[in-house]
Image (cartoon, rainbow, N blue to C red; front, side, top):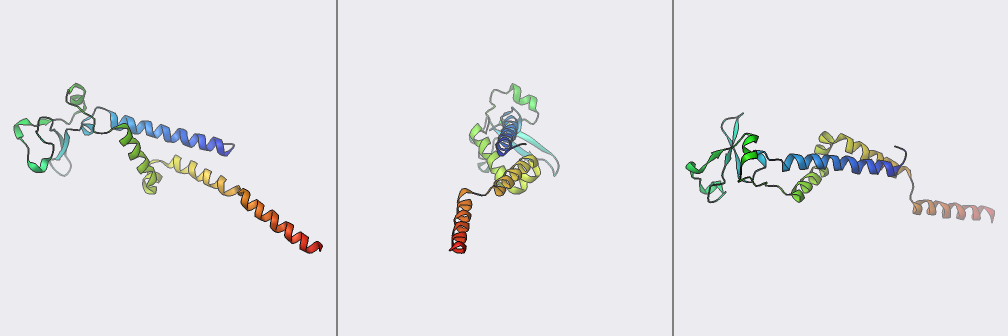
Amino acid sequence: MKNVRSVYKKLKEVKYHYLIKFYKKYLSRVPKNCKYNYPYKISEKHEIGLCLCHQPELDLSKGIYPNLIDVCYIPEHCTDCNAFINKYTKEDIKRMFEEELKDQKIKSKKYPDICALEWVLEQSVIDIPTFNYLQKIYFFLKKLLLKRIL
């Protein structure tokens, strides 16, 4: 990378790439992305998805009708399902992605390239002094030289 502008452009490009992956993950037709799918633990290691689209209410604390439950845990079920409604919108996904980027631990584990590019940007910003700082030095040196001359 030759300059700050190219690093910033690359950072935007990498973030966009990860956001597209996020969209693909959360907008795909798989059981976990369905509004009606409820993951139910059978044992410590196993979990199945229950489709609650025929239930009068999706609140499980009020009870369910067992005869109206479908088992849905295979992605092929979702491709043919007419009741599939995605539980995430694009705005929700973008907000989730931005929240992940705010958490430094998640960011350092899942997105090390973003961290590296941000570090490079921080170093380049630190290395370039601001105009006000240079102006203060200029006036200080000018005052110092004038005192010595007089």
